[in-house]
Length: 279
Ligand SMILES: [Zn+2]
Image (cartoon, rainbow, N blue to C red; front, side, top):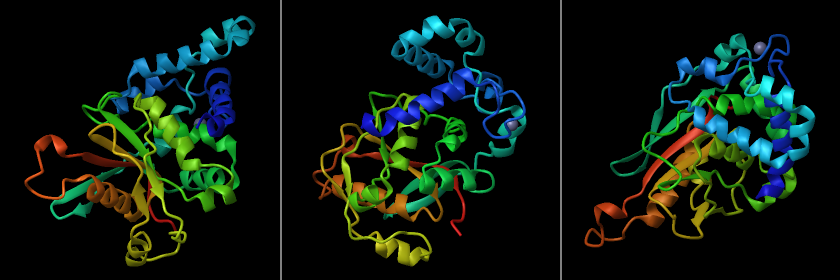
């Protein structure tokens, strides 16, 4: 997986630790995440320190060269306060059904409006890496789900088809999921495959989206833990996350009541970078 991620990682580190400008307006100084944390009390300092340690350990030559700058600008943040407040509107979670009596709650980090819509599209369709710091800043506004940690949870990034991966040449959702994984300190699990017979969801109605996704996902192995945190870049109607949730639910649940025990149940929740209309 690292081969998809390495080039993006360097750009993010430079943006976060060496560039003091806001990655959105490019005018004001960026504000350390810690000073923005009051709006999102679940942001933990440990995660940021961990990112710092990783950065230093992988770039020993930079330590000597830029020690002073790194110390000064350490955790300088990615956005200024003005820009942060323009995007930091945690939408209310919404629910979709994945089985009779089982709902999947979907929480997005922000709305799919200006400037996020443009940034996501530039990143996703034009591989515009300069937008990645803004997307990462926004992802970090997602509070880590209560009670979830690296030993009991995994992140399941919305799988893409091989066809789409080849056409696009990179996996945008997986790159974002890797950033979320770092932020939450919860590993990614890639045990779901997307079967190559669906067409793009864009421009379809909700009913069309759902039937398009019938049997689109197949588990290739049993989930290693009971808490599954699904992730997609944009949730519009939630149909893709719903179909993924349904597939996991139906392929992991005990087939008869007799077989079922409380411990067999998986807890599935879903997260997205942005929530809104695709049009
Ligand atoms: Zn700004």
